[in-house]
Length: 311
Image (cartoon, rainbow, N blue to C red; front, side, top):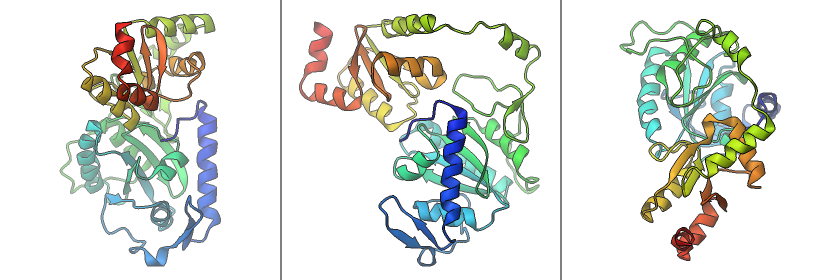
Protein backbone atom coordinates (compact mmCIF):
# COMPACT_ATOMS: atom_id res chain seq x y z
CA UNK A 1 0.00 0.00 0.00
CA UNK A 2 1.10 3.56 -0.62
CA UNK A 3 2.66 5.78 2.04
CA UNK A 4 0.68 8.72 3.36
CA UNK A 5 1.94 12.01 1.97
CA UNK A 6 3.93 14.00 4.54
CA UNK A 7 2.12 17.21 3.80
CA UNK A 8 -1.67 17.50 3.86
CA UNK A 9 -1.70 19.84 0.84
CA UNK A 10 0.34 17.33 -1.13
CA UNK A 11 -2.17 14.60 -0.32
CA UNK A 12 -5.15 16.74 -1.32
CA UNK A 13 -3.37 17.65 -4.56
CA UNK A 14 -2.87 13.97 -5.27
CA UNK A 15 -6.59 13.35 -4.70
CA UNK A 16 -7.56 16.19 -7.03
CA UNK A 17 -5.34 14.74 -9.75
CA UNK A 18 -6.99 11.35 -9.30
CA UNK A 19 -10.46 12.83 -9.55
CA UNK A 20 -9.52 14.84 -12.62
CA UNK A 21 -8.27 11.65 -14.23
CA UNK A 22 -11.63 10.03 -13.50
CA UNK A 23 -13.58 12.95 -14.91
CA UNK A 24 -11.51 13.18 -18.09
CA UNK A 25 -12.93 9.84 -19.22
CA UNK A 26 -16.48 9.24 -20.33
CA UNK A 27 -18.79 7.51 -17.86
CA UNK A 28 -18.45 4.29 -19.85
CA UNK A 29 -14.67 3.83 -19.91
CA UNK A 30 -11.94 4.07 -17.31
CA UNK A 31 -8.21 3.25 -17.71
CA UNK A 32 -6.77 0.47 -15.57
CA UNK A 33 -3.19 0.38 -14.26
CA UNK A 34 -2.22 -2.11 -16.96
CA UNK A 35 -3.31 0.28 -19.71
CA UNK A 36 -6.38 -1.78 -20.64
CA UNK A 37 -9.92 -0.47 -20.36
CA UNK A 38 -13.21 -1.91 -19.22
CA UNK A 39 -16.52 -1.02 -20.79
CA UNK A 40 -18.88 -0.31 -17.91
CA UNK A 41 -21.79 -1.61 -19.98
CA UNK A 42 -20.33 -5.08 -19.52
CA UNK A 43 -20.19 -4.67 -15.75
CA UNK A 44 -23.09 -5.24 -13.42
CA UNK A 45 -25.48 -2.31 -13.52
CA UNK A 46 -23.91 1.04 -12.59
CA UNK A 47 -26.73 1.38 -10.10
CA UNK A 48 -25.64 -0.08 -6.81
CA UNK A 49 -27.57 -3.27 -6.02
CA UNK A 50 -26.49 -3.48 -2.40
CA UNK A 51 -25.38 -1.01 0.24
CA UNK A 52 -22.63 -1.42 1.42
CA UNK A 53 -21.33 -2.30 -2.04
CA UNK A 54 -18.11 -4.28 -2.60
CA UNK A 55 -15.88 -2.56 -5.19
CA UNK A 56 -14.29 -4.99 -7.65
CA UNK A 57 -11.98 -2.74 -9.70
CA UNK A 58 -10.99 0.89 -10.40
CA UNK A 59 -13.54 0.93 -13.22
CA UNK A 60 -16.20 -0.33 -10.85
CA UNK A 61 -15.40 2.46 -8.38
CA UNK A 62 -15.57 5.08 -11.13
CA UNK A 63 -18.95 3.76 -12.26
CA UNK A 64 -20.39 3.91 -8.76
CA UNK A 65 -19.11 7.44 -8.06
CA UNK A 66 -20.36 8.73 -11.42
CA UNK A 67 -23.93 7.49 -10.99
CA UNK A 68 -24.94 10.50 -8.88
CA UNK A 69 -22.45 13.36 -8.46
CA UNK A 70 -24.56 14.97 -5.72
CA UNK A 71 -24.55 11.87 -3.54
CA UNK A 72 -22.25 11.42 -0.54
CA UNK A 73 -20.12 8.27 -0.73
CA UNK A 74 -18.08 6.57 1.97
CA UNK A 75 -15.00 4.72 0.73
CA UNK A 76 -14.20 2.08 3.34
CA UNK A 77 -10.72 0.60 2.95
CA UNK A 78 -10.45 -2.71 4.79
CA UNK A 79 -8.66 -6.08 5.04
CA UNK A 80 -9.87 -9.45 6.30
CA UNK A 81 -6.86 -9.96 8.57
CA UNK A 82 -7.32 -6.68 10.46
CA UNK A 83 -9.34 -7.16 13.66
CA UNK A 84 -10.62 -3.53 13.78
CA UNK A 85 -12.17 -4.05 10.34
CA UNK A 86 -14.40 -6.80 11.71
CA UNK A 87 -16.00 -4.26 14.02
CA UNK A 88 -16.26 -1.63 11.30
CA UNK A 89 -17.85 -4.13 8.89
CA UNK A 90 -20.84 -4.31 11.24
CA UNK A 91 -20.75 -0.55 11.81
CA UNK A 92 -20.85 0.31 8.10
CA UNK A 93 -23.68 -2.16 7.52
CA UNK A 94 -25.72 -0.49 10.26
CA UNK A 95 -24.82 3.03 9.12
CA UNK A 96 -25.90 2.13 5.58
CA UNK A 97 -29.37 1.40 7.00
CA UNK A 98 -29.37 4.61 8.99
CA UNK A 99 -28.19 6.73 6.03
CA UNK A 100 -29.98 5.16 3.02
CA UNK A 101 -29.04 8.03 0.69
CA UNK A 102 -25.31 7.58 1.35
CA UNK A 103 -23.38 5.09 -0.78
CA UNK A 104 -21.01 2.88 1.23
CA UNK A 105 -18.24 1.36 -0.90
CA UNK A 106 -16.18 -1.45 0.62
CA UNK A 107 -12.66 -1.63 -0.85
CA UNK A 108 -10.12 -4.40 -0.19
CA UNK A 109 -7.07 -2.20 0.37
CA UNK A 110 -4.38 -4.72 -0.57
CA UNK A 111 -6.33 -6.51 -3.31
CA UNK A 112 -6.95 -3.17 -5.07
CA UNK A 113 -3.60 -1.34 -4.67
CA UNK A 114 -4.27 1.10 -7.52
CA UNK A 115 -7.23 2.55 -5.64
CA UNK A 116 -5.41 2.56 -2.29
CA UNK A 117 -2.41 4.31 -3.83
CA UNK A 118 -4.59 6.88 -5.57
CA UNK A 119 -6.11 7.91 -2.26
CA UNK A 120 -2.83 7.63 -0.30
CA UNK A 121 -4.17 4.94 2.02
CA UNK A 122 -1.54 2.98 3.95
CA UNK A 123 -3.43 1.56 6.93
CA UNK A 124 -6.80 -0.03 7.64
CA UNK A 125 -9.51 0.66 8.53
CA UNK A 126 -9.56 3.96 6.64
CA UNK A 127 -12.51 6.03 5.45
CA UNK A 128 -12.79 8.71 2.78
CA UNK A 129 -16.00 10.72 2.36
CA UNK A 130 -16.77 12.15 -1.08
CA UNK A 131 -19.60 14.08 -2.66
CA UNK A 132 -19.46 12.91 -6.23
CA UNK A 133 -15.74 13.33 -6.97
CA UNK A 134 -15.17 16.02 -4.33
CA UNK A 135 -13.24 15.13 -1.19
CA UNK A 136 -15.11 15.95 2.04
CA UNK A 137 -12.92 14.42 4.73
CA UNK A 138 -10.64 11.52 5.72
CA UNK A 139 -10.99 9.33 8.82
CA UNK A 140 -8.32 6.94 10.07
CA UNK A 141 -9.00 4.17 12.56
CA UNK A 142 -11.87 2.16 14.00
CA UNK A 143 -14.14 4.55 15.90
CA UNK A 144 -17.83 4.37 15.01
CA UNK A 145 -18.74 7.67 16.67
CA UNK A 146 -16.22 9.60 14.57
CA UNK A 147 -17.61 8.16 11.33
CA UNK A 148 -21.16 8.81 12.50
CA UNK A 149 -20.29 12.43 13.33
CA UNK A 150 -18.72 12.91 9.89
CA UNK A 151 -21.87 11.62 8.22
CA UNK A 152 -23.98 13.96 10.32
CA UNK A 153 -21.79 16.85 9.16
CA UNK A 154 -21.79 16.04 5.45
CA UNK A 155 -24.83 13.91 4.60
CA UNK A 156 -28.58 14.44 4.60
CA UNK A 157 -30.86 13.58 7.52
CA UNK A 158 -30.58 9.90 8.51
CA UNK A 159 -33.48 7.49 8.20
CA UNK A 160 -35.86 7.49 11.17
CA UNK A 161 -36.42 3.76 10.57
CA UNK A 162 -32.94 2.78 11.66
CA UNK A 163 -32.55 1.00 14.99
CA UNK A 164 -28.90 1.98 15.27
CA UNK A 165 -27.69 3.01 18.70
CA UNK A 166 -24.70 4.82 17.23
CA UNK A 167 -24.95 8.46 18.28
CA UNK A 168 -22.82 11.24 16.78
CA UNK A 169 -20.39 12.83 19.21
CA UNK A 170 -17.97 15.71 19.00
CA UNK A 171 -15.14 14.17 17.03
CA UNK A 172 -11.69 14.62 15.60
CA UNK A 173 -11.48 14.31 11.84
CA UNK A 174 -8.55 11.92 12.03
CA UNK A 175 -8.65 9.35 14.78
CA UNK A 176 -5.75 7.26 16.03
CA UNK A 177 -6.13 4.41 18.55
CA UNK A 178 -5.80 5.61 22.14
CA UNK A 179 -6.80 9.20 21.41
CA UNK A 180 -9.94 10.79 22.79
CA UNK A 181 -12.29 12.58 20.43
CA UNK A 182 -12.50 16.33 20.97
CA UNK A 183 -13.91 19.26 19.05
CA UNK A 184 -16.64 19.37 16.43
CA UNK A 185 -16.36 18.89 12.70
CA UNK A 186 -17.06 21.86 10.48
CA UNK A 187 -18.36 21.79 6.91
CA UNK A 188 -14.93 20.97 5.55
CA UNK A 189 -14.41 18.07 7.94
CA UNK A 190 -11.73 19.80 9.99
CA UNK A 191 -11.86 20.17 13.74
CA UNK A 192 -13.44 23.26 15.25
CA UNK A 193 -13.57 23.97 18.95
CA UNK A 194 -12.59 21.24 21.39
CA UNK A 195 -12.04 20.99 25.09
CA UNK A 196 -11.88 24.25 26.96
CA UNK A 197 -8.42 25.70 26.91
CA UNK A 198 -7.13 23.13 24.43
CA UNK A 199 -6.14 25.70 21.81
CA UNK A 200 -4.27 27.74 24.38
CA UNK A 201 -2.52 24.63 25.67
CA UNK A 202 -1.44 23.73 22.14
CA UNK A 203 0.00 27.21 21.66
CA UNK A 204 1.95 26.93 24.90
CA UNK A 205 3.59 23.64 23.90
CA UNK A 206 7.14 24.08 22.74
CA UNK A 207 7.93 22.68 19.35
CA UNK A 208 10.38 19.79 19.45
CA UNK A 209 13.76 20.76 17.99
CA UNK A 210 15.54 18.67 15.37
CA UNK A 211 18.15 17.62 17.93
CA UNK A 212 15.50 16.66 20.49
CA UNK A 213 13.61 14.63 17.92
CA UNK A 214 16.73 12.76 16.87
CA UNK A 215 17.66 12.03 20.48
CA UNK A 216 14.14 10.80 21.21
CA UNK A 217 14.23 8.46 18.21
CA UNK A 218 17.58 7.08 19.33
CA UNK A 219 16.12 6.38 22.76
CA UNK A 220 13.09 4.70 21.21
CA UNK A 221 15.38 2.44 19.19
CA UNK A 222 17.18 1.37 22.38
CA UNK A 223 14.15 0.90 24.64
CA UNK A 224 14.59 -2.89 24.44
CA UNK A 225 16.81 -5.40 22.64
CA UNK A 226 14.26 -5.78 19.84
CA UNK A 227 12.03 -2.88 18.78
CA UNK A 228 9.56 -3.03 15.92
CA UNK A 229 8.41 0.30 14.49
CA UNK A 230 5.14 -0.59 12.80
CA UNK A 231 1.66 0.59 11.85
CA UNK A 232 -0.54 -0.37 14.79
CA UNK A 233 0.63 -2.77 17.47
CA UNK A 234 1.14 -6.52 17.81
CA UNK A 235 -2.52 -7.09 18.68
CA UNK A 236 -3.99 -4.78 16.03
CA UNK A 237 -1.56 -4.33 13.11
CA UNK A 238 -2.89 -1.86 10.55
CA UNK A 239 -1.01 -2.94 7.44
CA UNK A 240 -0.22 -6.35 5.96
CA UNK A 241 3.56 -5.91 6.15
CA UNK A 242 3.37 -5.11 9.86
CA UNK A 243 1.13 -8.12 10.42
CA UNK A 244 3.58 -10.43 8.66
CA UNK A 245 6.66 -9.25 10.52
CA UNK A 246 4.82 -9.64 13.84
CA UNK A 247 4.06 -13.21 12.77
CA UNK A 248 7.75 -13.88 12.14
CA UNK A 249 8.84 -12.55 15.52
CA UNK A 250 6.10 -14.50 17.29
CA UNK A 251 6.98 -17.73 15.46
CA UNK A 252 10.62 -17.30 16.49
CA UNK A 253 9.64 -16.75 20.12
CA UNK A 254 11.45 -13.41 20.19
CA UNK A 255 10.60 -10.91 22.89
CA UNK A 256 10.10 -7.49 21.36
CA UNK A 257 8.60 -4.04 21.89
CA UNK A 258 6.37 -2.34 19.33
CA UNK A 259 5.97 1.35 18.57
CA UNK A 260 3.03 2.66 16.53
CA UNK A 261 4.45 5.21 14.09
CA UNK A 262 0.93 6.20 12.97
CA UNK A 263 0.60 8.08 16.26
CA UNK A 264 3.93 9.92 15.98
CA UNK A 265 4.48 11.66 12.65
CA UNK A 266 7.69 13.33 13.83
CA UNK A 267 9.33 10.05 14.75
CA UNK A 268 7.94 8.44 11.62
CA UNK A 269 9.68 10.89 9.32
CA UNK A 270 12.90 11.12 11.32
CA UNK A 271 13.33 7.32 11.49
CA UNK A 272 13.09 7.19 7.69
CA UNK A 273 16.02 9.60 7.50
CA UNK A 274 18.10 8.11 10.32
CA UNK A 275 17.80 4.54 9.05
CA UNK A 276 17.80 5.49 5.36
CA UNK A 277 14.73 3.32 4.89
CA UNK A 278 11.57 4.94 3.43
CA UNK A 279 8.91 2.51 4.61
CA UNK A 280 7.58 0.69 7.67
CA UNK A 281 7.78 -1.70 9.46
CA UNK A 282 11.39 -1.26 10.59
CA UNK A 283 13.06 -3.79 12.89
CA UNK A 284 15.72 -2.64 15.34
CA UNK A 285 17.98 -5.10 17.21
CA UNK A 286 20.19 -3.82 20.04
CA UNK A 287 19.82 -0.25 18.83
CA UNK A 288 20.82 -1.03 15.24
CA UNK A 289 18.54 -0.92 12.23
CA UNK A 290 18.10 -4.36 10.65
CA UNK A 291 15.60 -3.86 7.84
CA UNK A 292 12.03 -4.23 6.71
CA UNK A 293 9.88 -7.27 6.04
CA UNK A 294 11.87 -8.72 3.13
CA UNK A 295 15.17 -8.47 5.00
CA UNK A 296 13.69 -10.02 8.14
CA UNK A 297 12.18 -12.88 6.12
CA UNK A 298 15.56 -13.62 4.55
CA UNK A 299 17.24 -13.55 7.95
CA UNK A 300 14.65 -15.91 9.37
CA UNK A 301 15.14 -18.38 6.53
CA UNK A 302 18.92 -18.25 7.01
CA UNK A 303 18.64 -18.62 10.79
CA UNK A 304 20.34 -15.26 11.29
CA UNK A 305 17.69 -13.62 13.49
CA UNK A 306 18.45 -15.76 16.52
CA UNK A 307 22.21 -15.48 15.86
CA UNK A 308 22.00 -11.67 15.93
CA UNK A 309 20.22 -11.76 19.29
CA UNK A 310 22.90 -14.04 20.77
CA UNK A 311 25.78 -11.85 19.55
